[in-house]
Length: 113
Image 1: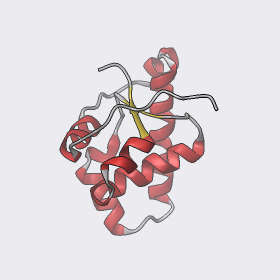
Image 2 (image 1 turned 180 degrees about the vertical axis):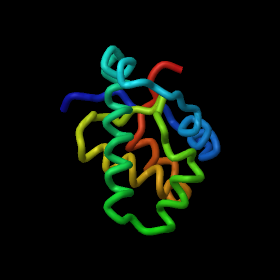
Image 3 (image 1 turned 45 degrees about the vertical axis):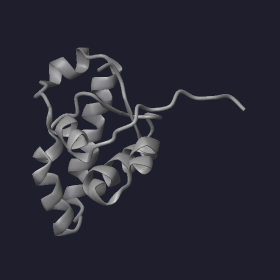
């Protein structure tokens, strides 16, 4: 079986929250010219906005507001950049306090410190 590189371990949920809150505003032009990881961030942002429009529970909306509405995610990447993993990241970020570090590790990989 082929081994995959393991994501770096996040010991502290406060660190995860700081990484999520550390964000930048990107213009449409910047996103078009950006590397793939920023394009993924833009897709994820659109995905989150769409789900909020589609009536997520009020408690989940409040959690997103506390996380700075996830305007753009600068450092975080999902292991596979596919829609189902965008779903997993959305679930993680709206419920991260209830997840243990192993679950966080399984979902997230931090690229380039």
